[in-house]
Image (tube, rainbow, N blue to C red; front, side, top):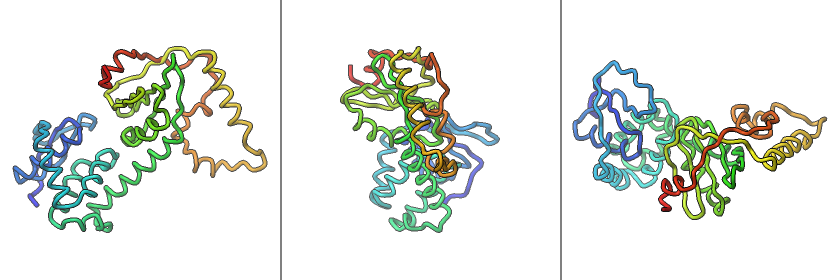
Length: 271
């Protein structure tokens, strides 16, 4: 393995961009001190180098991972790249260097900190995505279902198959406000696109009535003598509740929402 250098790689945050950084590291025989995307805090004390995304190089690296390590390892690092593990991208690079050295067995080295940190991050990603599959609450605005979430991991790629299958005939948007992107779905197509904000107009009287009924149901369904706040917090963690209708205060006006169907179709590649 090359020696650690006082050098920082800057890339566009995409998976192909990360694999381009892996190619750069091997080509120059260097191990960067950090690999940073636009979402990372960039207080840089060391020299930095921008690594442009090169799809030919990223494809070569991906094929190498599948052939010299395993297809499972390729899927694993794709998931790890969605996680919120500290120094995630550099950890992925170190994991791959280990994998190219030892082969498929790298996936079984759970006691190795270079492997375990990413394994833990992927498990956390999967748990958070599983929570959101049950905790996402939609608001209907002019025939479009809209939701805003604040996940710690990039869960939208994991939520896409779940919600697109269950609401295939609907138009919906799940906005990840924490990572400035959104899952946009229309019948027959869906895509994750950059989105800085989601403004909502006033909810319709029917939507407000449904929200009120949902809150009333939540308040009355429990058996008073069997209330168990600790179990409820375990099954429904506190950090998800601000986004859930049943825990929100009664409102006469919903969040502002701005949605243009023609623009959305273009972003989805439908027109």
